[in-house]
Length: 183
Image (cartoon, rainbow, N blue to C red; front, side):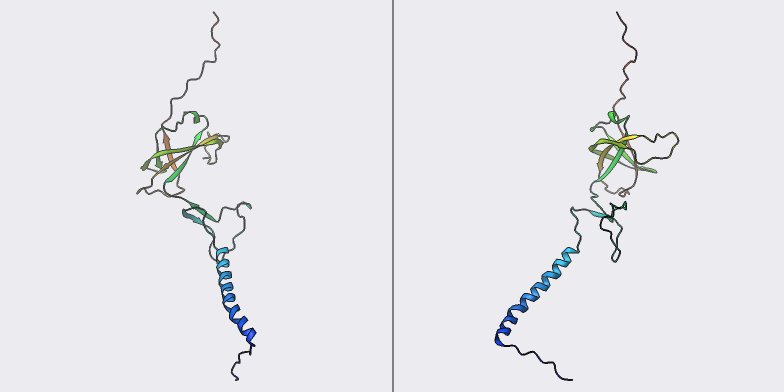
């Protein structure tokens, strides 16, 4: 085997080579950094990954929600926890922001916590979670009320259902349907 020979450069090429090599290396380094940033997904807000539906090596569609699929990553803040309460539209006028409310873990009334009012979702929407009871109306609309609470040491997880009891204002007495007497 013959030893590998370095190409013979004239003095001008040698100066050019000394000038190009560091710039070429810098260019390669910047290209790798850019590729790493381009392929890295960063969260727009601080939070915790609640659900991950894509893993290393799997195909990830560009817009899964546009095709009717759930999102690939579910991200959220868990301090404090929030609970979304559906209030029947017939009782919506009785709910007040200052009213006390208590949440109980569904299936375990021993686990309960006081709630703090956050806000009303101002638009009354069709009820999503229908129980299937024969007496339940399908066309029910609900006002959504958001409450918050601190998890502390409660065995409660994000996504669990809770039964919420809200202190309601007295039910208004309907006006009489009879016309007033003539005098």
